[in-house]
Length: 120
Image 1: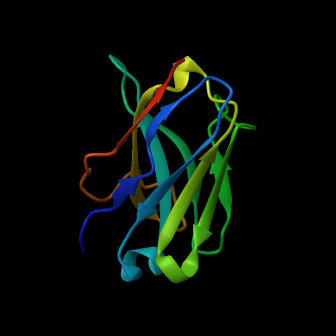
Image 2: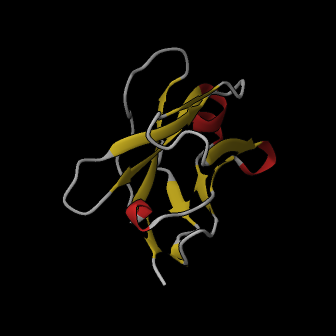
């Protein structure tokens, strides 16, 4: 069914904000939850947020309050808005799809992700 495609990364100054975009096929978008993950240098990939087709959301405690996940339905895109960026947010950000009604973990193959670098 194709893998999600991430975009929107870049270099940002501390305290700034960024929106990341995850485009998926229409079939996946309508029937699965979409989640954002990140992998910091030397660390394992961690899930940050998840949103279902009904826009129910779930956030990781480690970053709750600084991110908002949302859906752009006409574009089959899930957006991750990160605010008050810190150098510790430097990572490759990935998205993937999960079962809509249970914690299945990622079901698709991983793309290249999008690099976010926070620094002055």
